[in-house]
Image (cartoon, rainbow, N blue to C red):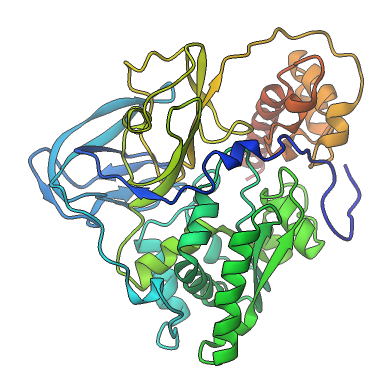
Length: 459
């Protein structure tokens, strides 16, 4: 494992020169309301909800339609007002998931509210009120695995620092950047709410230096609020500019870069006194607690080989196929459709002909990316050590790959496979084009399963 450093994080890569983000970063967010939405009862893997509605029921936008049944689940809400047309299983990334299909009555979004145009006083909001709002609003992490937000904040650990992740280091994606540029007040009000909820002494809004306009805009708002002296929480908030490097937005990497702390093996950020939340989650907190609207919309970047790339604010349950059609369709006959970014997002279709459905937007869908298909065959490992040099977790991916292929799970565990963050740096840098990220992630999951089984046997 890498030794702890005072600043920054080890490894990492610079996968692009900025051309990818330039495709959409200067395009304002556009709202889109589909005729129907298909809301999945699993908004993240393992986060299952039971539905509270049936076909024929009338629902209002923001009303609860799903009750959590699993640890990874958060309450589910109607993203549009209308009639429940059907409750059935649909295919979502090679799995069948129960869903609720609602016909949209055509209602559009409300006008901007006070918290979206100025900093507001939070004096009347207690920590308990904020935590209840986060839980009841169905907030989840909007930049990663969709972990329920309230579970992070309802910790028995002593928290001294709150990190708000605005790094958006994944190539091609600009949804967080446009959110920071267009909804600065909403984000900063949301951060102040999360700061009160966490009980931390200080909050850091962390942004990579390749987003200078967002940094300037947010600093201007924050400085004006601090000078007014009216909003106490703003005095504890700092905007931290970080060098652009992937995966700067990883929880552990962000903590190490900003605070110089290393999360222990098998541990969580709370173990070192930190909570990390995405900027989208901060805005969602403001929407729920100050605006009374649960998490039912998000910005999705649609980019790559499409005629008109852009960022769209859409209700949860919007069809990915519909969004690609809205962007003029794909421009590469041989293609790969990625749900999310190119480093961590799964490939949901190859050589897509714009006929079959792809997937439906969930709370943590950050992008729809179309890339030209460039399949390459793997070659034998040449022991160059490149994957080890770029691994931000300080692992030896090539060794874990060999151990996993040999089904030597004891060796995988001794090589700390459990600490893989599935960032994809190893596969990106491998000259032999080996799918190291896939095998290392599978080894991680196997090792963690063995750890859980041992824990159950000891109990």
